Length: 90
Image (tube, rainbow, N blue to C red; front, side, top):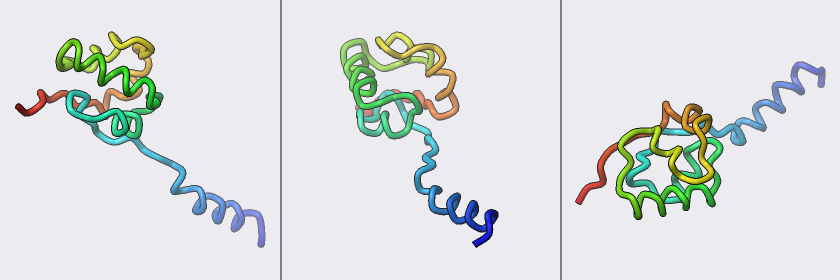
């Protein structure tokens, strides 16, 4: 196989590894969903988001995420297009 064909085959093989974040409501999503959908948010930070939300109530703005220990403004900016703010249904 020539080099361009090998590169194309490698790219196609790696496509499943390229994960793109999707919109997520930070007021209703569980920790697993938050960690799967937000870039730079692992399970530990996602659990911290859920704990903060349970203690302080729903987030009002995307910027409120930076109030959670371990989440900075840069993480909020990276994820801004995918952060949804909706009040939880009662």
